[in-house]
Length: 385
Image (tube, rainbow, N blue to C red):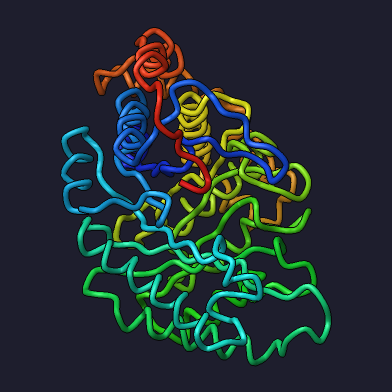
């Protein structure tokens, strides 16, 4: 049990700055009281999540949503709050120029604009001390014949190579994939295989990020995780959930058993070893639930799945597998999954000087009432700010 606690204590779960702003679905974004009006207030909210959970010490930024004049000063502000700047997320999907694509656009001018933004994000990494650039492209086509599929892959490869060459020592980029949306006919990075192929060609500073909501129904995500870990190409996770097509619901909300299975493959593949560089990040948008509690609950969900994965009796599992004991092997899995790990996590938090129930502790802290009263006026942060 000591080893399990040590692993849980060492786990870091990064929260995204945009989760603290007003965000939601393509149909409606509901404004809430106390929402941050600038990146500094986003960091203050993220610091609350870390203060109550003890395992969320970094915050991912999204550019230009988190654009400031002085990124080094923003990083200093984060440190003063007890957190740090995590991954820098690029945005090449909200400009009118990108209607037909960004780095895969038919026009060289648009491709140059998009690639320059990605290079700007590396500059921001330098200024903030971030070591990770996150790349997601909405690029794709809606109709057969609209553009040449192969040429778009060539354009993508050319841009990625420029960004890769700009990365400094100790820096990397994570390439994200998504089955569809907003492109309907063909997405330029639709699956892990496409992302993996580009990353392998580029080298060790290019890795794949697995967004748990970006797959077709029934896809075995844990297989993808196991494969990428085996090849040294799993850079991290964007944790969220989906029930049907869209994603960004709280991680573990749709299928907590799947999250457990994914985390087991991380354990099995050595993904908790800091040397692997696997990053555990949330990528969620809270449309109807309160922002900070939504992040706290999400962090707790990842912790619970991780604790259960660590409880799998791997010796018993290996023995059952080697004997071809189908039901016995499955029982080992299910025994771990059905274990109530909440008392273990509560005990761990108390050992760290934290309240055993982060949700209750936050509710009692008065922080929400404070920001609801103070953050009046100005423009609340959202998908466009």
